[in-house]
Length: 349
Image (cartoon, rainbow, N blue to C red):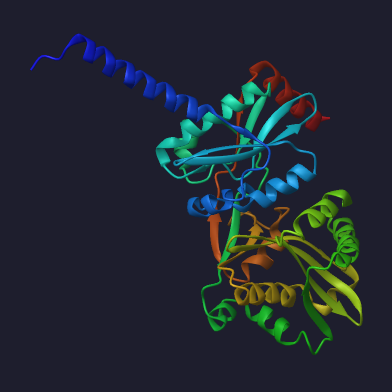
């Protein structure tokens, strides 16, 4: 059977239209907060909480413009960051790749957005795709922004099993908390912000690490307390707060996000009992995972800046989770490389 030339032309036109339609759809991006249904879709994709709508709401409150895009095979949500002499797109723990073959499509979408917004480069941390695939995409590895390793505790286990995985020293410390006069509680009252900030400052001064400015935590609490995505956990002794943590909640996960401790109350050993309360409360509230957040790599040694608290976190058990690290893709190569050289010179000085 011989096809009519007109029919062949019509089929070719339909095919071209379909391809153009697919490319157009892939290159679209959206500005502002995603719809409420975004998180339902992210749950199916196993996306990280930093790719959730609550985190976008917080970033918007900080003054960072939010943009996003998705299709059945991938999704990403990014903020525009104004750096020193550069503007770039940052995708924390994203894009989320559902189909391992679709990383390049997601990157094309990101590049389209970055070019349309006259940005200089893209910084991202892909999830759901192998390191080999990421390395072959043309992106450049850089120092990690978000932790590359974490510990996740499976809360679907029984309380007895969860407790059996604690170190013996933790079990003893937890069992003796009441005897030492510790009162452990959780709260969604904003009045806990002030003692939390005081302990964050004390911990930063003692351990010589850089904390966020007070305005960061204040905005976080004021934005996400009303949405139910933040909760305080407090340890008190004789009416004084000696340990305070802000946990972030997203879908089935609660994360051990920000914590401060009184350096003058170390003998009370409040931290381990407070973390245990977070774990048991999270299970009772129906969460499926407790994310202990960043840890130093196995074998990093005692000189690693995270060695102390990583050992503390590992003594609660949990499964180690590995992320891809941070990667960059230049959009304006000259500005991007000038920026990198300036950073290297700054470090040397």
